[in-house]
Image (cartoon, rainbow, N blue to C red):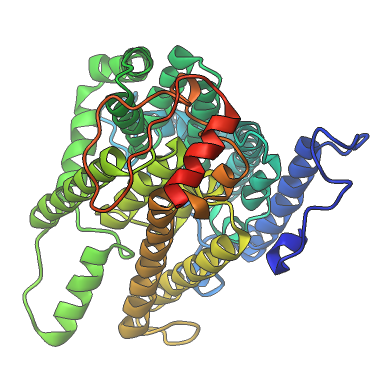
Length: 476
């Protein structure tokens, strides 16, 4: 942990060299998650004791989507009738993807046995929080195992300050866990299983599909299409396993989810809503929801095309985790429904893409600032203008811009690591790409010229020495 202030790895902490006894790397990481989970629950203590009421849940920064969804989306049983089950109840609509709805439906059904609405709401939050801590542990262990020679990098996720605020905000850690396991399986050359988990993760949060795009770009550059074919087929099958029952039993629910996504206004933390807020204050014209949806899609496509060009033009092929982080970060910035809790998507990818504590902690500090600013702004907006423990719009808009800018800066650092592999701490350790599976050390077949950058062709053999030599040539 002294790496934060520039210290070296302790001689008794070297994995595979010193026997740690009971306290193996993964067990220490799980202990970290357990302590972090307890602290995260304590951060919600006021609402657990007094209930999730407005504006208190914002002014005390203990707001969470989980208990509010239970109350607002009709998961509590009403007058002895059966509880609403998302996507499967008659004429049901739900503001989240299908697998998230299934998780909410099952936990809501279990929580309804707690008694009154307030008791059931608390039980729903506690039950989901317990499951989220388990997903947190799964994410950390999968990240540690997928990091190759650097398992301690997973401590970035296990002891994350930002997750203390955002872990129990929504179901995002379910998606993060599925993506982390999928990347681990792909690294171990289990392409079918990896694709299947990505298909399931996309039913929790659609950003998981961008991981398949990473496989596409790496396959395009190496000319090896079997990993992509296997992963894509498995992802489609897994997605259909979840979606077909919904489409057959209640197609209106899926249609309502899609139409709401297109027609609803953007989230408060998105750059589009920030523009609208500033425009309203200045008396300028604002953009409609459909227009914003089109702009968001156009910006995402522009970002994807730019990153695809980078993947094909860089002198040395980008690592899997680097491309994954850049694509997901671009999506989180351009998303119409951007939210501070989406840091959960990025953190495990950043731990693999650029495992430098100084960078990660600085970025998280700004993300926490954005999350707190959102709650204090909503406390004013939804609390009938109550100025106590609240902030005005200009300060909130500034926080959103800082939050977005911090992510752009981290993306720029990752791009620099790609263009100049000598800055990449993972490749400095003598490895090529721990997450690439069968694509690691594969020679390039299709590339684009990058101005004034030497082309580096990797040999087909998994030889760390040749990888280090290629890295040195690129640095020179």
